[in-house]
Amino acid sequence: MGSALAQSPAARPVLHVGYVIDSTGPFVDASRDFFTGSKVLFDDLTSRGQLRQVRISQRTTDGSPARTRAAVLELARIDRVDVVLGPVGDAALLALLADPEFVREGVPLVGPVSGVGTGHPLVGQLVFFTRPDYGQEVAFLMRHLTTMGIPDVALVVAPGTPPEVAALARSALTQTISGAAPRRLSETTLPVDSAQWPTTLGRLAQAKPRALLLIGDSVAYAQTFQELRRLLPATFVVGLSTVNPRTMLELMPAAQLAGAILTQVVHNPARTTLPVTRDFDRAMKRFFDEPASHQSMEGYVAAHMLLAAHRRVDAAGRERLRAALGAVDQVELGGFGLSYPTRQARGSAFVDLMMVRANGQFMQ
Image (cartoon, rainbow, N blue to C red; front, side):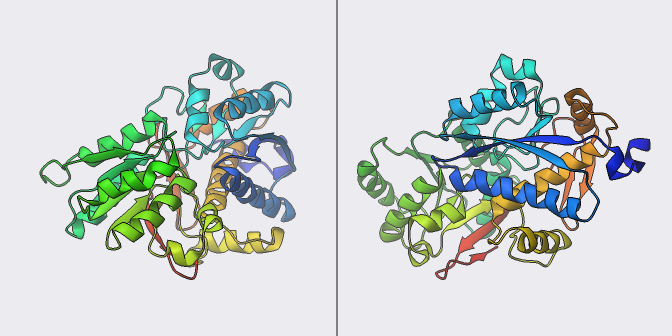
């Protein structure tokens, strides 16, 4: 690992980190929490003399993929950041992956909050994931449902969902597991006009599915869950990690969301049984007077990945940092780890299920 790892924090170059934070749109809470979770690690290590000052630049957006793409390019060109942590959102990431200007700028993205992009040639070159993809989330869910004797699930796709997200979920749902027969997949696409959703869901309810997977954001999940809880009170209604629990609970009372189930890609930060969640909890209480969320935990993990690479460089520059990011093979966080056996690995395959209780607490 070389002498760079043995350097004192003061000997390493200052790290210039960029963030895109939404002021409107479906990712307001997620982008803010992701920023908070990563910054709390920087603040904690700096206060203990383990990290030289980190310089931060931000761009605020309207939550649209086009503006997020533009904000990343502004951070690269105008602010000259070394790296962007995030951003949040599948459509925004897909827009960047398809943009030749992003490739030319060469600014790496670490920890995008997205479950798409697996297998893209820029992964491991410019994009470094710290979480699994949606196919892995769906596969975990189906293994869990199969052990409960539920071999099939109805797929519901909210309007505005990127086709790549629906395709990943569809592919994972139709695969066989442990030699079982191929699953029968029923799929419903919700109309653009949400006023028509009750009619569409009413037709779906006639088939009485035992489990339903919604592909959509927090607003779509909350509205769909409430309607299906009325129509099918015994059906499991599951959302992917595209759903932000905090946002969902801001939309309606917790009692109306009791029994909502979401896949999550990090440990519940409220359960401090692991060294990583204890460290995170301690730092959050010291530097931010607010409860931790799963998205802030994702930011904390992504910041650890970035610093693992930063410890390898002895001079400033995106090129050196990109090379260092590509050379990271393991990051151990105390009960939770990242592993990169290949350059295109996503770092983590951790998936768990979380249920909302009537008092607003999460059971994971």
